Length: 282
Image (cartoon, rainbow, N blue to C red):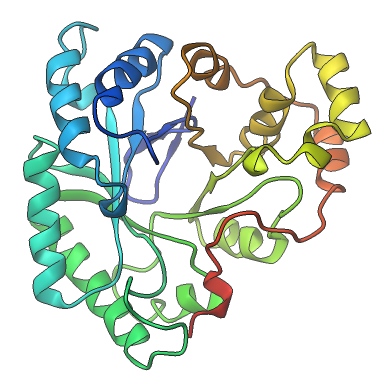
């Protein structure tokens, strides 16, 4: 399953997240993911694993009879100065051993060393947006998107020629359904992609009566139901695991009936479980 981004490129609906997949385990985990059928690999500057992922993909793609164009690579950087953004894009290309990045996201609405109220946040967001789009025009990036952006952060890009971004990657699960933000993205043809789709394995959610009922109805695990709740709405997911069995299981989403998607959505309590609070960033 894939979706067509507003840039015209196809993006797999189910991808493989690589947060905390580092060091010696990268090669084995990427091998397992390719074997399970994953074709989207999601990384970021702050994950510190671009080099290992680039080497693993270079070595493993031939083993799985795949070429670079058969996979989709996403990476991310935090807002920064024009010079630094250009440097980091070049570094990503070098470390990932590729001449283009499929999707480059602005990882968060502020820089890593900035406060939520820093007056430079907007300036750096816009500078980063413009540089990434220059890199897109130069063929180094195919699609430019954002992550953890609120509606106001998206709106500030509205006056720019390259609006809208191709994607907004946010925390999204039945306890945190982001109704207004999702509607804005849907209305503006911005691919809505979820991280932390399993709500950090929150026990209250996973063992709730509604999820238990769905597991029985579809003969599926609670993880599959949560991931499928997203994909059944056309929302992308990027589950991560280093366990071979879970890597394969997370790939197998199913289509839930509309009524069941709505029933699961009623579990919303506007509760986030990740320390990404973009709504606080000015």
